[in-house]
Length: 257
Image (cartoon, rainbow, N blue to C red; front, side):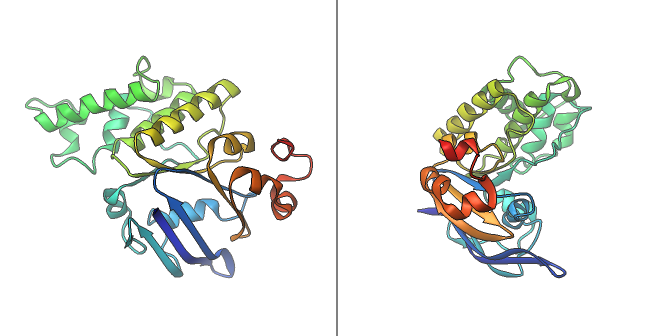
């Protein structure tokens, strides 16, 4: 069953066509990838799904209900969370407080009481703080709860995932999660994404590391100039002549296997 359905989505900026008649279904419980050269429309696609942009035409459905045109916070409350290609963390806060910010959509009481550790902190804030610690343990940052500016780049990437998970999403969008990571960190990231999926969270990711995408994703969609040129299992996408010509290239190691 498709958790996310994009039906004939188009988006333009002036005369620039960024997405053109794009249709994608993301099955619940899957790890799906979106690849393509720079300027293919990948980030715009995520922005349409999360309500940053409204599509010019077409429909976005989440769990069977249309969400296109809704505000970003309303879409987040329905169960969609994301990370960003460029990190958007708060360096002057510690790791726990960064995760707490991700929980704001779930909390009824003011988040400021928790962040400032005010007297009389309610049970809800205490529970949120405990959950923040649990999520940091889950992503492998249990011993790295210092200020964000002191974390390595790879650890900051994992922290951003923990913050996204704090909103209890059903669908997690990861924008270039392996950017700046070394091979060891990328392998740990793959394990983390699988563990997220095993928690019942569907994952959709944009990534330029083709080796990681081919190993991790069960289904891959390829974009070029805003159009879908291929879609399917990794082996089929890797061998598609249109994908090789537009993106991978004949000498790409992912094509070779």
